[in-house]
Image (cartoon, rainbow, N blue to C red; front, side):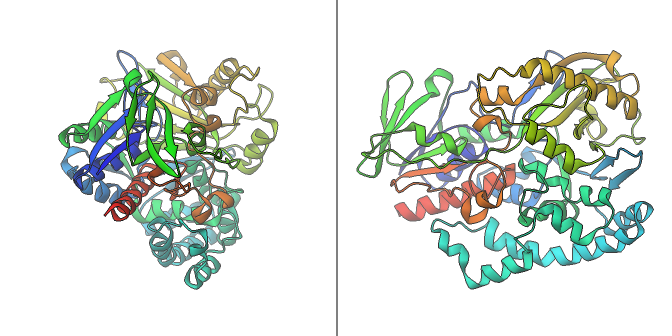
Length: 497
């Protein structure tokens, strides 16, 4: 069997490895000069830091699928983050999240005594629900949507209270608004907002405490290089840059026929896997008598990302942890205003929430000795048009300056004067790289775009055409994209057996 893969992100590379190890002949095409997709580094001559994902969740899922793809545990190193992270609230209070249930209960007791006992109940309730949902949603596909509506799943929906949002689930357990934020902000990891993401995503805050948050030594983007080395071990042909740019997928009579490259070269394939933001796939199809009707998808949230190299290192274990969140007075209202206005907060408006990644807290080699690299993520609206007149560069720079000043005051004294390298990325930059409408996480984790309602790995009635990536079931995040690749490949191999 022979297969072509369009896109060298995590989903594409894992699919290629699993197919090759099953005996298939695989060719991978990537239009960028490098592999890895959203797993990449921002760097200059002196500093390097992850561009995109920084938090490793569900480590056993990642390890297990990596092993199936021929990658041994000793090819990369995962380090547990404990504390998980620290949240700084606008009233000056803070909450440190811990893996250990007893320690987390003690921490909550200092902030809100009633919520301390509620946390234990929350963890007890979520454990069996997570295991059941993992089996029936994360590890299952729904090529026929009605298969989701089995009696067993309907009972599970009732237990999960799927009519509620992740924030409403948190509100049903906790009373203090700070704690509610602490157990619902994780919707942001998937590109959603807490009040608009279904209760299924409650398993993210549960999984943090149950399985930990992990850091990949050298940065999460180093995992892309691990996968790339494995591609060559498996004799997978890889074309990048101009040689890897695909213009169209050629189909006829309801079947895949091959690829047309940007340079006009044609290749014949019966199996093609598309690894990119799914809404773009329809535009690549050529040859069908009836054009594919493309549903309108809701994009995931955008981000302004600020990367900084700093010629200073702060003492460990004081106010700072590897991962931190700085919160506005109301997270819910802040996110709602950003979405409604379709603009970044101006100078006279309150600062939004922001996330801060400081790998030097856990990895002394993340920056030169005595120096630091930092990553700031600020929620942003989605640019409707790549050529919008909104000045993303200017407005993002102004907002970044405010965030840096705030971080200096609260966490990093002397930060701004010590910055020697800085780079800012906007949703418009992501849009220019092919991210659907600038969303940083594929399509949004809304109810109508989750589970059976999310695009599946065989999304069209075209034999031999498949898709994998952050916009596909089971969802965004590196382990889930890897899980999607595993399910896709198992299906393809069974179909072609």
